[in-house]
Image 1: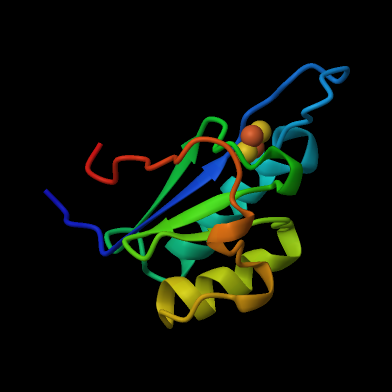
Image 2 (image 1 turned 90 degrees about the vertical axis):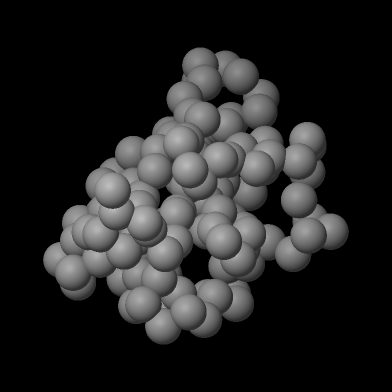
Length: 118
Ligand code: FES
């Protein structure tokens, strides 16, 4: 079984339009998740990085949200335009994309730690 070096979890949660919390799906998360997977696989990362769709990561106000393990680097406000930079700079180069990082003090809600082994 492949041992992935990194796991990226991206929230694709969808809520009703009238829900005041909003959701990442309404901000294009499904398309961004697909683009992340394609960009990673196109660069030969299929067995190196796993792109996982996730439910709500409790950072709804700053979605689209994703988190990269093992570094536990959180990103907010991710758009399609950020996909190539995240893949090139972080998933390949190991350097987080600083302008998108959500610092720990800005994280809201319960501590969410998706299990990279699942
Ligand atoms: S809906 Fe995406 S973090 Fe909550």
